[in-house]
Image (tube, rainbow, N blue to C red):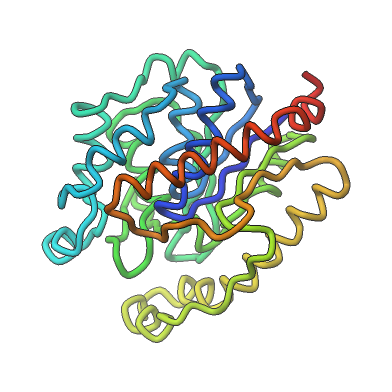
Length: 281
C-alpha cells in the first residue's frame, strides 16, 4: 500500500496545499493519508478532491479576525477561531465536500496529542460531522494559543507535540511506500522551544504533556532523520521546500500565501517524473 504523510507547520502548510493540488491535477491517489495539524486541515481537501480550496479560503479570510488574530486569542482562548475555522467556514462559507470525502474510500487519519499522557493518538475521520471536525481542531490546537479540546472525555492538543512527522505511523498502517510532504527544508533542525517556561506554568497540571514538550525538539529531529533514512532506503519519497518558506506559523498577507502555494506547486511539478517512477505509475 501507499501512504501520504503530511507534516504540520500552521500557515506553512500552504506549501503542502500547492503540492497536493498538483497531485490532484495529475490523478495521483494513495491508499492512506495521515496528517498533523495543518497537514490534517489542508490534507482533507486532497481526499475530497477539492483543487484550489485551501489557497482560496486562506487568501479570502487572511485578514479576517474571526479566522486568525490576537483579538480572537484574547476573546476566546484560540488564535485560530474554533467555531469559525472548523465549523462555520467548512460548513457554510467555503463548503467542504463531505460526500466526495466519504466516497473517495481513502482512510484519512489525524494525529492528536493526549494532554494527560503526552502521547500521540491517531483518529480516522469518517465524515465531516461536528465531532469529527473537532478531532481536526484538536490536531491543530497549538499550545499556549489554543484551548484544550475535549472529545468523549479525552483532552487533546496539537498532534505535532507528540508525532510531527507520522511516517512510522503510516508504515504501521501497512503502507510500504510513502510520500512525505515536509514544510521545512532538508537542513532544518529544531531547537528546544523558547516558550517552555510558559508551557510549564500553563500546563503544570499535565506533567506528561510538559515532558513531551520539553523533548519535542529531540523527537522531531529524530523523526526528520528517520524520514530521510527511509528515503535513502527507497521506501519514502520526500517533498519539501528548498529553502525556508516566506511565512511562519501566522500570515495575514494573501500575496505571501500565494507565493508559498506556488513554491509548493513548483516543487511538485519539478519532482513529478521521479514521483511517478517511485509510485510505479
